[in-house]
Image (tube, rainbow, N blue to C red; front, side, top):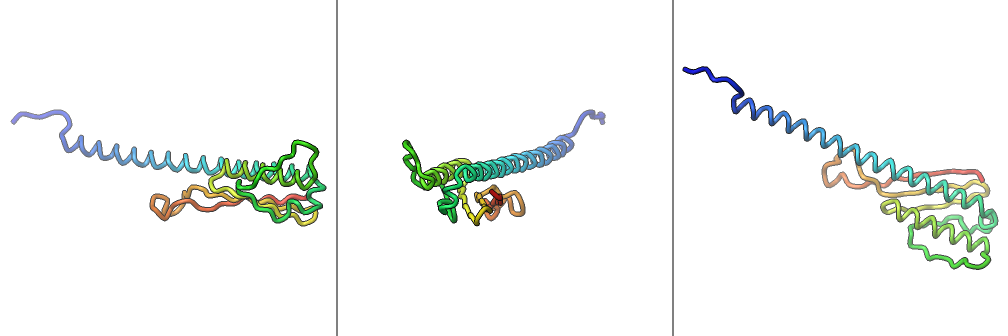
Amino acid sequence: MKKHSGATMIEVLVTILVLAVGLLGLSATQMMSLKNGNNSHQRYLAALAAEEMADRLRANPDGRELGSYSSKTVDGSESSVDCSTKCTPAQIASLDLYDWGQVISTNLPDGKGKVEVNGEKVTLTVTWNEQHTGENRGTASGGAEQKSFVLAVDL
């Protein structure tokens, strides 16, 4: 019998199988990295939106005292306020809430914002749906989960 040299068909198939399993693991790692990066970007946008609204509240103390901000929830469906001439503090508050709702609904999936004013203490809550990256992430039950960012400030 002649002596054969080189790789056999079984060795080649085993090598391809090992390489395929490694590439699948690498792609799953890449997918989780992209999801986590997207989720952290959404958390950053929520924190930025809450900080912006806190600054708007600081800039309109008369609107705060009138209760124009208290117990308001925004989701982007608010109507715009025509403030082309001199505005009252209540109109400025309505414009602030409208702008905040637009920012949240544009940048966050199913985003909503809530303002609670209690004297000089203000609690701003931003909620949105985030991609699920935990248990059951690859199944139908592993869809989006609701996240929230809460900012409490003393004005």
